Image (cartoon, rainbow, N blue to C red; front, side, top):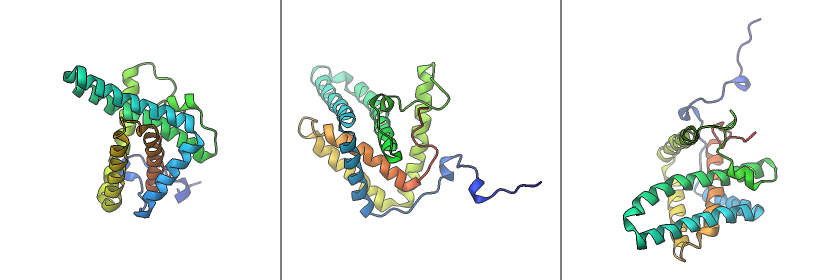
Amino acid sequence: MNLESTPDSAPPPTTAFDIALRTLRLADIAHWLGLGVRDFLRAPWIGLFYGGCFVAMGWALLSVFRHAPVYVLALSAGFLLMGPFMCMGLYRVSQQLERGDAPHFIDSLLAWRTRIGTLAIFGFALLVLEMLWGRAALTSLRLVFSQTPVMLCWGATITGLVVLALLPWFLGLLVVGPVLGHATWHAYRAAVGDDPAQVPATR
């Protein structure tokens, strides 16, 4: 018997260019921030841990700048890798809350794991992480070009909040960091919906 494919049985998108993008509005930005605050309040201790990491990273950068400025560039490059790595833990918390599950701290720390099991080589783990983020960044570029006003306002909002959070000796990042991490998850969800390239499940 010849079975023809139906819309319900269509294969999931295989590349970032196959992902359907939703139309966003400027009013959505406040909604994402509200959801970010909500997720932070629902799992405050997990959020404060990641916020504390952001603060510690800022203090470390200041200390290196004062005592060994030649290493500032190298340390900043390391932070550019650790920032997204830690945000994946916040994305995992928002994902669990969205599903109605109780978020777990250890689970958020291991959000980088993939379905294929434990990765034996750390370099391979970084490669998988880079591929996941690379896919999301292709998607992000499509959003910027297709919905420029909303994305520019969203970027300006993130920049403004981060700058304000940096002023009191980076202490504002204790709350602003995790809130923006959660909010970014909801922004991505609003833009792409059920994309299989989202933060991988740990089981």
